[in-house]
Image 1 (cartoon, rainbow, N blue to C red):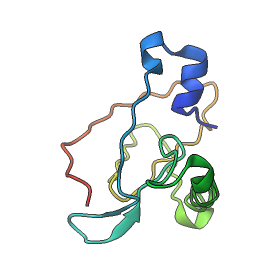
Image 2 (cartoon, rainbow, N blue to C red):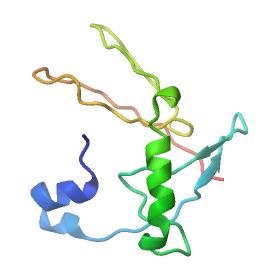
Image 3 (cartoon, one colour):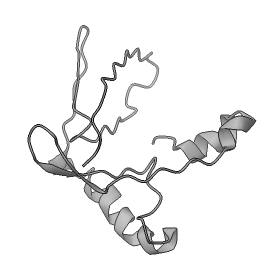
Length: 118
């Protein structure tokens, strides 16, 4: 189980982190190099569709959130000492599974300058 921004705000956020920030993004993005289209919604950040209320958006978002993590659409990486993994966030949903209880997870993240969604 992962914690959403809202979960973190409830139990461990500074007061200034409670400010509401909204951004509008396209639901379907076109990959600038491959031309393939991909959905751009995720349970941690997407709250509704433009022009719709949260209540109106909820059934479709619920379907998409569950659809995108179906086993046939996923890749499970088996970590071993010295392993490295990377992915293109423009076309892959990173959905980590906390299956390493009792072990320390060390990560180094690199974020490259992106492109404007289209």
